[in-house]
Image 1 (cartoon, rainbow, N blue to C red):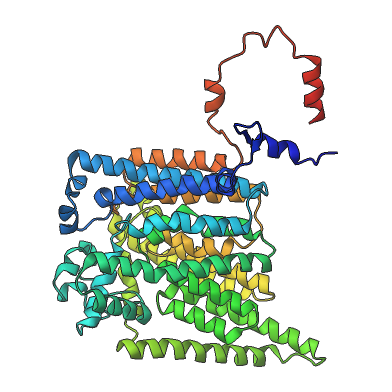
Image 2: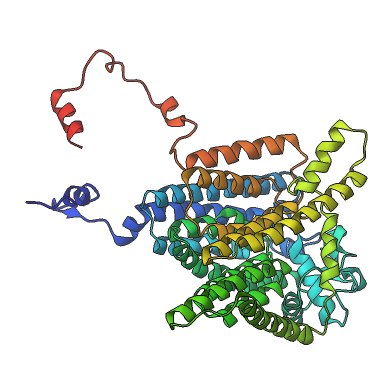
Length: 535
């Protein structure tokens, strides 16, 4: 009796000249699999993005490299139009591949190992792209050059160190002190010491420096999902392979990639009872960007829970809560101070990044609740945006402080509570801070992906991720104030969300399928009916 798989294997084979069946090769079988299909589609999209970025991305104001390669025509006229089309086609292809992969993962047709195979295929083309959807990479280089040349980036903006690197910094940031931690400055100083004022090499080296963060995320997110009773494959797909993460953090060259990777790895180490090492990693992430530090107070609760469990396992009474808190929090503060102090000493800077955090108030867009509220209020009142924005930001900051304190105390009892508290804290900061940018949403998404989610929640996150991905222009400008751009972004995000559960949400296939003129008059043969009934 033949095995059930035999007919399927035969259907994929083709006859040779001598009448035998030629079995498909391993490569062909992989490419026809759901993961292989998505890998190819996403890689094509990433390649289109990379090429289109040379003309439509956040290009240098003067780019002699493109002139030497005879590609400067991509930046102007019809060349710019072609580049823009290539970028958006690449974005849409990557989103389509991602949604298709997610649909297959939900159906159990894609494994965690498959996602690890897809990841480098999608990432590789982005490594050679011009920075996209943001000019922050040029600010990173200018800040690193300041430290290299003896300036204090916490005291002055890049404008004090004129040169090629300054020429490409966004005008709004030329006089702004850096809000990033000492490790970020050390990395920037090291990169610019190696590459000098070469913008291309400097950007590329920054991108390579961020890649370990992606590896740490890909390692930590599935592990955290197992501990939170989530689906590791879905978590990897949602938090790591998400085009919002790959295109913005790798294509856009953002230090969030390394910061989130260190934070996620540290959280996992703490859950594995390697508390000091985990807190050190999260502290290192905070020394790149302060956001990672939000996880530290919640990790103290995890450590305390472990200490209580160990005491019970050893047959003794746990220490009093206050005493246990003082012990664990004290060690945590020492570890944090050691990491931050060492990095600051190496960089030769103080804690001026704390005051520089207010520089983000220069960003005004609809992605943050205080700005959104201020805009809406000015529609119905004679008030001007500036004064209203000051009030809404002050109210939201007060609300944020209340929420952070409440969440820290509310989510203190178990490991799961503490990790959920981190999600609440990161989400609150993203939404209620004076300013928000699309890639900021990668912070809470990385942690939240570890939890089991309903189909409705996944659908909403797909729609939100897609909308955030397409709402900015490839050159880094904001599309939120163009009605047509917003409308297209909403349409694309709705289609992407519906596609997670429906293969053809727009019913395009049914519209183009020719009707069968005999269908209404000729019933199917009995054998056919019986065959369908047996499937």
